[in-house]
Amino acid sequence: MEARRAIELFAAVASHYGVGWTPSGSSKFGADALRVDGKIFAALTRKHRLLLKLPPARVAQLLADGRAERFASGGRAMNGWITVTPQQASEWMPLANEARAFVAAETRRKPRKR
Image (cartoon, rainbow, N blue to C red; front, side, top):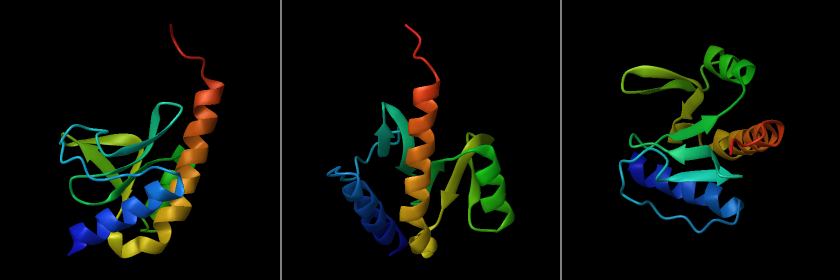
């Protein structure tokens, strides 16, 4: 039930950005991700949580408030990445908007390597 809810929520987030999203079934990182300027800002994890890239201060605030969990890959905490459960559905769209704005600003500041 939680998995279906997460898929529906993520599809709604994707639709908000004009993306016709369906789950890929791939276990590869980023397979079920939303991007801005080629960089991931949001994804649906295998544990059916919303994964977001946010600035360090915002991550710290969300963790301290208990509104998010730190994302770990291979047992290693990934700086700047948090997850949000489907039970926090009202947080998904606002936080996705924050993540997209953050990543878009980051890509504008950093010149791409050639």
